[in-house]
Length: 406
Image (cartoon, rainbow, N blue to C red; front, top):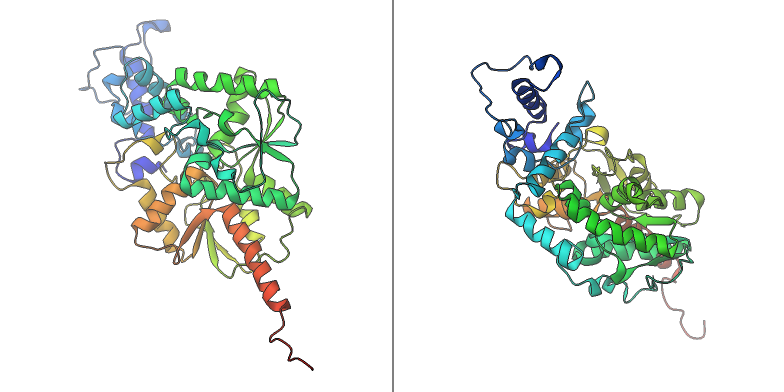
């Protein structure tokens, strides 16, 4: 199940657990009775000389992990392997400074610019300059229904700016009262925490929480599952408790309640949805994005062979977004090939990292956008609504201009 292992990387989650057991058994003088039972597979010729896991586990194994949680999901005895890998990353990152060089660039960018892209914070709200979007002053009281947490990708990445703009237009159509923080919003710190840099994560999280609490924010919309997971599940550890909703869940609710009119939305195309690990396995949101896509008239929805709880990672989670992939097949190339094999003309995502990785993979496989269009569910939905409006307008228009005097 491990996407790193399946594409030829040195990581094997099962071996991480067994090697941990070997080191425990070899260095267990502190344990009651002075010993710990070793795993059944221990080779007697393997010697362990130090009380350190890294006698048996290499840093290459640890950094290959995409934190997709497939190993935890599939483990028949519910061993939480990902937590162990992240703890090891924390030691490597903070105690040994043993992390990939490219990750150092992301760390510096998060520390100095407040986002891993290394872009100026003053450009965070640029995507909204032609749209009717309220940008808040961080000192003002929050008087809107929702805060739209755009995230770093939605603010700075050219592909994902289109997602943010599409969402803003859909929220406007549905009459939802939202506002954004613009330059005051900082990275939630997901990539820092997933790569073991707990110090940097807390350095980013604390000012965000202080600002949100000071403004009185209660409800947050986010289009990034990594922001969603961090805001909903990790900020409460530091006193930041909010009602966080992913844009797929909100769109599903708006469609079901009739607030977002999709009666004319139509696309005569085949579409497949790619599960985001942080939306699916980490937060059990599987059906909301599928229901949004399936609500479009005319679409033929197909599933990839690996989907739902057994979905294949795009390769960008666990801060892998900021690291080079040099061993084996690229994870996103393998997943893109799987998406193309369905014969779909559109691939739907619900995560900015998935969007970038799958779009790169599909283009790397030689498919142009007019053959296979990769985009977020909000873009596909807005395309369908606007397409339906064009069809209706064309049907309502007279076939020819009346002749004068008739």
